Image (tube, rainbow, N blue to C red; front, top):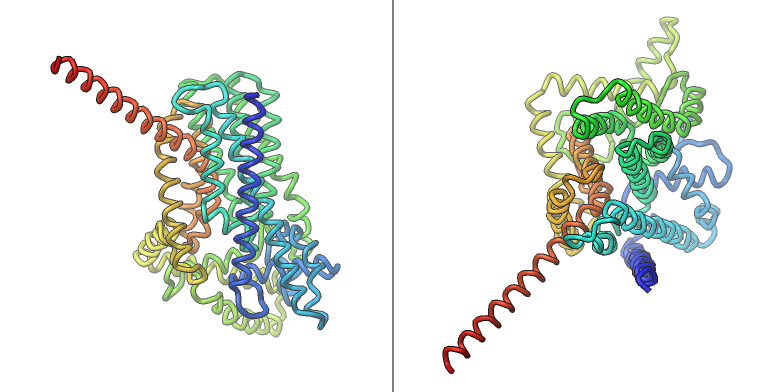
Length: 470
């Protein structure tokens, strides 16, 4: 009966989260005016590339000079739904509405998976601990993930976070399992988990290229866990940990290598993610930068014109051009951004603080989001972060538990350099719901305990008063 109740609650929360997201998708799409069906420019670029995949056309955005414009996983995920879109063939424009809505429902399914993963990860952390409300923490983690507006938005906006978030949770979960297996000296099992963690992390990179620096952060975290558990690790134990990390990197390489080979064939260069890194960096570091992407990447056109003019001069001089135009423009943008930051270090530092505030401020500043939704986001975000702090303290001695807070640090540091937006914190806030549920369970237990103590105190005083009266 106990397990039946747990399974029922688990399924009910996942179903509720999915239903809320589908309803939100319907309301969101009906609020969009015009034929685009999107409020975010990134959504449109994913859709265009997905349609090319769906129709068997070359993988590119617009011209052949944009063949490494987007990472491939999310356009591949979207491509089946683009088959419903017949608007470009001069047929009923409503077909695009149906196609985009189907994609939003698919994203809602991924959101339901995230809720399931969060509850499973929370339950695994404290499945043997019945104290301090930890036995029911998974329920509260699920509740936070179900109702958090940022998580709902990432499921329905037709952005790559829809598939990035479940992959991120899976990768972190495998890493956490590996850490616990290593502490029990079950090295073969730990290595298997690390290989799976690397594979899912590689998929996450193919969804969101910004995750590609995670291996460096994970190495630091694993080193901290090792030296905390074994202050003076032997060479044998150190080699075991390094082997696990090596398998993590191997998993990433196995998954991402087809993309690397394809990019090499197109450019003659090693391109680990996309050729939009330079543009993204320049978006955050350039004269007049505000910390947000409020110029719509319009500056890229000027760089393309400059690069074409330079290419023409090089060809007239008989010099061979390096790689493709797309690669050269990316390097031009990257070098310009770094040069500006070095020459204007004080402005770059100020911008870093502005970006941090834009990313982590409770109230979003995005123009695409309604004011009422912004307030719901602010309340949900603040509550989750406060409960997560309590949860971090509660599970400070649990192996691998703080891993779920590390993505917050990762994205905070990353977007000091790139642009800042509440969009970029959402995956990290969703992950930290694992710790937030633990903190919420502790808070509820503390409130109930206080009420019980207060009732007992009142009852005791009533007895004393009756005795005095007699």
